[in-house]
Length: 328
Image 1: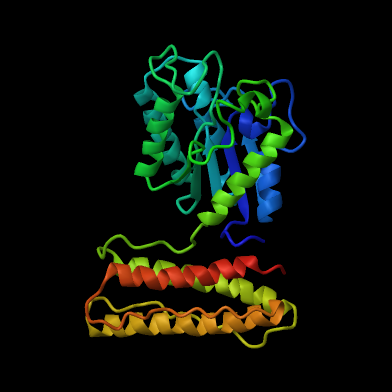
Image 2: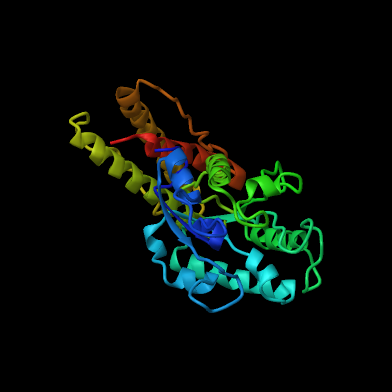
């Protein structure tokens, strides 16, 4: 399994996600190449002619509503080109509906990792993506607006315009229909690029803190997740006859006030996490022969600092990602 923190990925998109080449479906769409390269399960929810704006079954919101997102760790969203080519609505109408759709995703699974895949360059009745269409804006204008919407919500976004695969110069060779839909060999290039993009932006299981308003709950939520993931791994590890005894648990913080007792419990919890990581290193070493030492920068300071706490969680996330690499 690849080191991306994902077991099950679902892809929401239009005909390009579905694997359409302009006249039929290719044998191996994007989902195939992503799953092959990352070693994860990928569900393809691509829908021909799907749009962001609309209530047809192939449009984004109904597609989300008909999918059990509790079964997935991550999803990709790749809609937009049909909103430009098939209907004539203001950009704000599209971005407003995109926000509605993103709300629907998080309502079904608040912990899901969302990856935005912006539209590929299209050449339907235009010589390049900068040419305005009937609605008064170009594809690049729409892409800019979609990108801003995704990024304003902290969503990791793949912009194909950066180090492009399909260009004005090569589109007739790489697109099976010459204007929009990739050939099988191009689907492979695109799928591998998406897999690399996910690898470079893995799903971090533990949440980074943004303020101290609910520090006890935020710390305990992360400690609880860490306990559950590590114990799941330990159970599999023990079933192979390689482990004995019970894995240590992080004791959750029960101090009510941000006082000395709270800090002692917090420091103790991070120390327990370090002990678990040390055991993990031994487990991985016995399975793979590799020992990757990870050290939590335990925050001993009397002043609570969000960045220093998040540095601790980043190390703990690395440990969880190492767990995801182990084949049982």
